[in-house]
Amino acid sequence: MTRIALRGDLLDLTDDPGFGGATSPCVRFDADSWLLVDDGRIAGRQREVPDASWQHIDHRGRLITPGLIDMHVHSAQLDVIASYGTELLDWLNTYTFAAERRQADPQVAAEQASRFVDALLAHGTTAAVVFPTVHKASVDALFEAAGARGMRVVAGKVMMDRHAPEFLRDDVVHAERDCLDLIERWHGHGRLAYAVTPRFAPTSTPAQLDLAGRLLAAYPGTYAQTHVAENRDEVKWVSELFPDARSYLDVYQRHGLLGPRTVLAHGIWLDDNDRALLAETGAQIAHSPSSNLFLGSGLMDWVRLQDAGAAVSLASDVGGGTHLSMLRTMADAYKVQALQGVRLTAWKALYSVTRGAARALGLEGEIGSLDLGTVADLTVWDWAVGPAASHRDRLARSLHERVFAWMTLGDDRNVHETRVAGALRYRRG
Ligand code: GUN
Ligand code: ZN
Image (cartoon, rainbow, N blue to C red):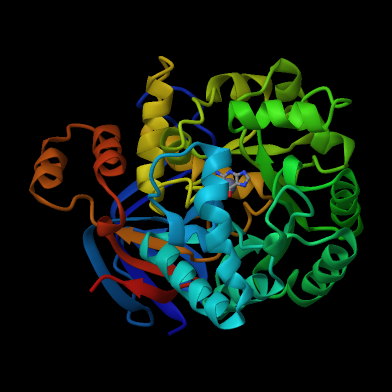
């Protein structure tokens, strides 16, 4: 299998449609066309039937998009998804830390990593920025599993040297040793990249945050990922722990952690100075609407971030989020904006889980679109599943109406197949 041709309705975004209307020049849609994939890369899109040198795969009547990108998700937290009754800090202590503890066992970590990456693929997600746990074994297992499937994954060892149970704590010396070893082993290995990963400001000492900043500076191409300004009690705690910092975000700036390869989950409780700092440094927000609703964290102000020039992409944040489906994440993002009087189009939502996310990671030449020459990470979708969604799909009068109904009513049941670099990695049934 080196030359394949997929037939279906091809959809991607050529640029950021912004908070515009239902018609956008950024939408590229070719109904009932062929997508050519040669040696794992997109080689053409055309209406004419390709010649017999291409293996024909007929998905007529189905939607084909770039594989979706989840900008922030915790592999170990599949175990605590849908846990009742807490806000962030209690949720961590009551459910999450105990679940993460299990990943110390390499056997458990290997099983979890396979389960997790296969679940991403079954949800139509081909690339992700991932938190494993503080345990080196969990990072090795995740990279191993993602690498075996050829996936584009950014991840790193969680760093936590205070305010966490003893069984999850590292220290500066051991964290440095583990990070160096993991960077050496995995960063730039195939499609894998390392992210320096202090969990969040409360669980790292200033010395450990310094280490994180040094690692980020010392290894070009590495990313940084952490959480910022998710919950009001958390923000208050950070202001007590770091009295000299101007804000929660400023803690990361002081430790050299903000740059164009920095992914910050949440970013709800920010002010104008923070938004300007994001724009200035190029650090981006991974907006996690399902998690923010589930944990009662708050409503992220996307328009103000966008107006300030900060990048925003979308994330499931499982297990704070309640599903790995980026369609359901897009639908929840719509609702979070609706509560603030803002209308999120299907175009902006889809852009944010494809080209927008790729651009924010500096990977636009590789993922996030159906551009010629990019890697053929693809998801094939049923436009609608079940009687109600099928009925709604048939009644759609415009492309936006149809795509909006797909994203609002759809989830992993809509995924027909998922391909990574052209290779079939998931097919329903
Ligand atoms: N802040 C620090 N750790 C976490 C986590 O695991 N999930 C979420 N949602 N927020 C966090
Ligand atoms: Zn998170």
